[in-house]
Image (cartoon, rainbow, N blue to C red; front, side, top):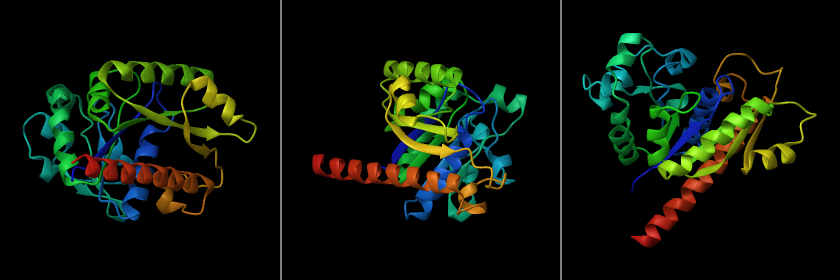
Length: 240
């Protein structure tokens, strides 16, 4: 049975897309679902750095036709698989974003869950995974600029037959009205990650600060996506 692809997207940098991708990916892996996280932010890749991985080759090499996908997959924290990028200008220039489509389809055949990190704004490498995903998760902070940019990404998803399944609000203070923010964004709020000063700065929080409020929020989000994956699996089975 084919796995499920979820694209993590947002219109503004620094809102926590990569952090969300990593923590949710690990939460899904720990729940028993074979999971791979993919760094499709080809221009500003940082997944390897975030996880402290030193692995060759990279996703950029695969997209350039210079390496096999299986060779580029590393093992990250808690056994989650990682397909990270290479952060050099030469690698970015050589990589062909259109090759993301067959890469993601191949990963779907090999893993239960494929969680794709994308860059800020509207770009080819964002639209490709959005178009082949089972769902798009918008990540935004509650500030007006981030919400406006996230809405633009959600609107554009319709043009590539993408489906936004909901939003994740990050860096949320106690005085934020989450319901009002969700209404303004126009999407269901799947998760609320608090601004947690007690959590260590080291990522991933579900590993380094598992009892923190932020880590617990990512685990709840992982459980929601896991339930959605299970429901989609049942539907596919019934249709086959």
